[in-house]
Figure (tube, helix red, strand yellow):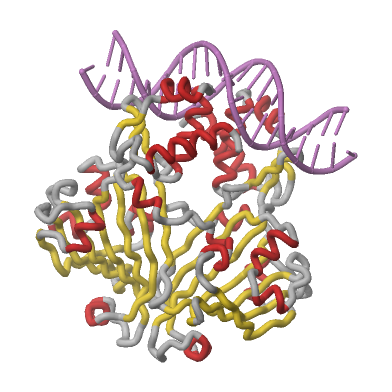
Length: 238
Length: 238
DNA sequence: AAGTGGTCTAGACCACCGC
DNA sequence: CGGTGGTCTAGACCACTTG
């Protein structure tokens, strides 16, 4: 870990422990850079991290302050969402049931989302993920077979993302998501065990590699009473 | 606008216009810093912006590349969500109907979300926003009366956010959102004109000032067929 | 080994706030 | 006016990829 990350870690701890109380002024950049024996640019870079996390804010001419809601935001674990369920809920028992698993040529929609030609086959899979034995989410997933190679039922029963990262060495770049509400389909009623008129929360996403190539298109349908989606936005423009 | 922002703007344009084609290597930092006659640090800062936007990615030792999906992401206007509906959909006709408007003492839930004491009154308002005359979203909003002062029905009929920013001079810091699906309530059926068993997409949010003080707690209920919520995630850790 | 991006420095100037 | 944070420089070293 480089200097500015180490320093950010120390300051973050001071905020969490109340050494720098909520809503207070913290020492200026010159003082801090002397304390940590670094240049002011490096010191600023450390503070930039904390500003991105929403822990501090700065006013030219005035100083650097601890955010009023600094402690609240701590509660949200910074799980990158494309780490997959297994990593997002590490303390829970997650099981998977394979409902469909095959390789086929892509539909129009899938071709477009995954930037494929019609002759490039994709894995199509449907999994029911259960949390502590209870139905949690029904995933409809498409992955191009030239990027995601060697998929087996064994892998599907565990964490696909662990396989992609550790065994295939893929580097994730980001994801584009669309969230909407929908009526429960016959499929949802069957597998999620929800009532006929229950709403469903659907997360439709395309996940990309670092070079921007899409490797997953999926629609995850959640029971409306089991899951909500949280987002923390920080205003960078000011 | 400072140097690194100007340079970022130029490079962004080159990517959009295909001067730097998708998936290609762009000139290295030393070459670019000579072209723009700036130091390498400044050049890197310009590229940092484009990396945050998901237009480029960099590999130590290899070079800087244009993302495969660079052009796709351009389609999403970078509307900060707390700019309000009026600014998000500037080309559409948006009208508001005031269903409820009063000032009262906060409930337990509102006190907690807005960090208030029980003796600090809040504005409570319910607005139906219509898009091109059609019901679009039903907003239940609470705002502390000591921050958001001088609210009138006239303001509610237009853009509250414009009033807060321009007239009160408030500086927004960010927002915390929770998105879930729900069953339509009697209220939703009445005002959104949806069917009894239609699902509803609810966005529950707390919006903060720059100093971390919350100034809005709201629940916005959308017709499931009219609105979805989109998110672009960029992986910063790599 | 050469070339790339990432970090770090010491110092400078500027814009802004509050006294 | 002094002190704050934001920007920018010219140069250095390092980590990494590629030929």
